[in-house]
Amino acid sequence: MREDQLRDLIDSRVRRPQSVAEVAARRRRPGSLLGEHGRLMMIAADHPARGALRAGGRALAMADRRDLLDRLCLALSRPGVNGVLGTPDILEDLLLLGALDDKVVVGSMNRGGLAGTTFEIDDRFTAYDAKSLDATGFEGGKMLVRIDPEDPGTAATLEAGAKAIGELAKHGLMAMVEPFISHRVDGRVRNELTAEAMIRATCVAAGLGPTSAYTWLKVPIVDEMERAMAATTLPALILGGEVTEDQDAAFASWSKALALPTVQGLVIGRSLLYPPNDDVAGAVDAAVSLL
Image: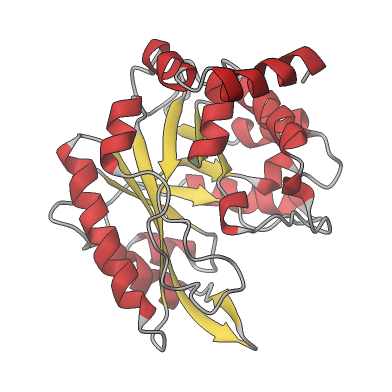
């Protein structure tokens, strides 16, 4: 990003806050959730709002907003990338930079379960709601649903998620639900990445809300992925998870999952924005080639 672009972005926020709504109203919306390749290929960037800034060995990788926006704009410019997931601050930066035309834009909704806190499972809806997503002209909303059998905060998260799914459906917007069975291990929340846990989480997520007509699932790679994905007929998107040094193995697992009938694309964040060799374009292009 050039210095003048950064100055213009900041100046818009300081002097013309109404420009966010104006640019959103002019944004060219996509004709479909699917790209020309027949899949949905999204870049995820909603981690910072939970205080989760690490990417691989870089503890504060996502803390430099200018660098993050550079990486996002580059990723979104690559052929085959037709969507982005983010919180209001990031998506509005991208709007003002003109990077969201013709993209499927999904706003992250519950970011209140801050990483490393005692209330992490009680994941409050602190960002977008269905009404604001519809007013902004975005295509959907995403929610994280972590189910901890020993944490009573799970109940509030499930109830809020069910309500959000219903509200999104009223507006005809996608509800992207990211379910996990989670446990506290040495004081930290860890997701259980087994086929059995994913089946259970998927079944719970698919049944949330008054309708599942607009619900899509955002799921991790687990062993016996075929069993996990056989638990529902809802469309699913594969998430990237933590940055790994073995990118070839990650790509191979994504490719195998994409062969399953319910899997409709990828939602990848840090693995593509902060690849081990820092070649964002190369990593994104490799992921797109799997589609």
